Length: 344
Image (cartoon, rainbow, N blue to C red; front, side):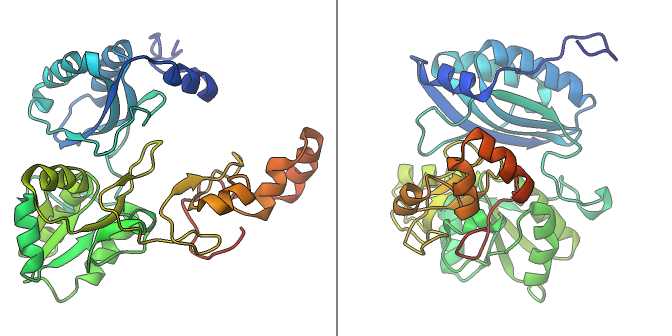
């Protein structure tokens, strides 16, 4: 119960182990879907509560952000409840035409719980409202149009973080080295300096970051801004359905428990520990660290899934030994990745 409002809080209080076990015991199939919509919402909290109450009853799982500027969602929906889920979402006038992006590789185990949060923005960018206008965005290109534009020599920019593009990207793309979208926007602007009159192509996972970036670039005087419709997720669907050439190399990083879905057979990255060819992201087995990094099977076996010697020592320690190590070791929990090969 919320002491301020007197209402029951709509949240999931079960622990990770219990949630994981429940998911593993499910006998039905799930569909992993992502979607977003920039639209003005007068009461994001009210929308959030309505979505949570209905989707929780439908056994939906996922991570959804709601803000005054719209919605951004990555979800896992039971196949037998898909029609009810879609009907409820589209019952909101603001979301009646939201396009869905269905996962390329999907075992239904992408999320373990339902989280719907009210945020200031659906994608944190650090911009003030006078630096962009989401009603003035770039042209949306189909996979076929995108391929043609690349062949004609357009400038291609990856609007994702370094740890995403590291395992997969379009050939000859400009690849920012930022770790957050907020850091990336000014970096992209600097990378494109002098190209204000050129044809610029933007791509990201599902399209939501490109939408904001295209508006940002147009605000800064770029004339011919274009974005990949539906992002990498829908690009993969389109090239398969239409028999088009696949110009994406490697894996598409996704923000769920899968951490990636393969778009092409190429492996373009390397294990952060030994340098072997590898594109498998993992989180450090030491939960106090939880570092996201790339690890091959040999290093995973050698270090029990840990990112380095300190974490491996802590992971293998007995409870009483952990108490002493807690006083000596500082784990950088929450850091996304590290560039240097080696231990922490």
